[in-house]
Image (cartoon, rainbow, N blue to C red; front, side, top):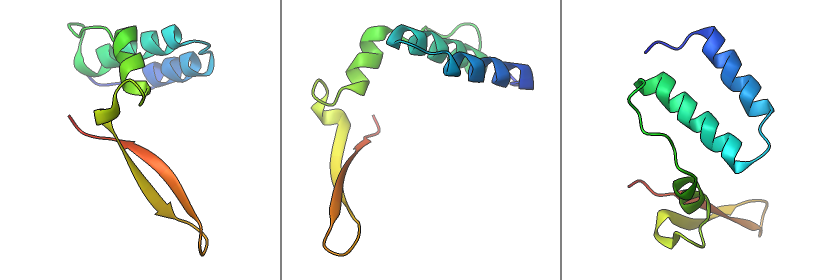
Amino acid sequence: MKIEQTHIDHIRNQFADMQSKEDLMKLLSEAKNLLYGEECKPVQLKSLTYYANPALCKKRYQTFTIKKNPGQTEQSMRLLKG
């Protein structure tokens, strides 16, 4: 499906008004339907929580170090594919 500017504006407005995980879940489900069609399964809150919390899902994230100013480093995490 081709996304029109009205869809983009609608998603931006919903994103700006987001207050909870449920709002994010609804927004992701709506965006998924716009991108892939009406037959998509909605995003579930338990899936969103699972992927968002590295303590619950240790194999989904990898910790790595970024070099900063001389002698300083910063730890970061990235989501692994799969």
